[in-house]
Image (cartoon, rainbow, N blue to C red; front, side):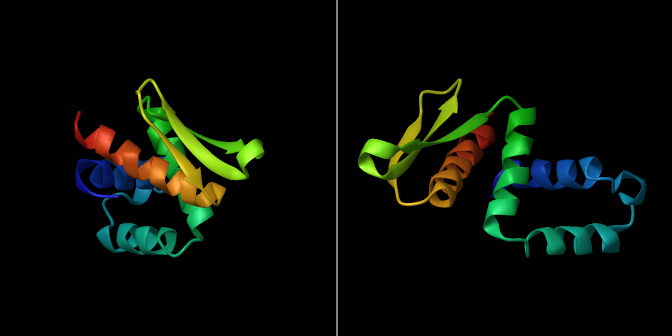
Length: 105
């Protein structure tokens, strides 16, 4: 993530994952974010998808069984990605696209 999307995501993460009472404790915020970025990608992706859901950018990874591949679409935006080998790869690419969309707001 980058730009305003990263700034807003990290604020949202700290505020919405029971850290609100410690928001002014910069050291705690840093360690919470540091711990988050050490989680497996699939767990990070789930939290990032929740953030984008909250701002109206809906990421949908889909399995194309006939082609043994993963795709994604972002509802409300004419954008999609195709031909990914794994759901994680499709989701990560969708999140990258969602970041672009968010940063253009």
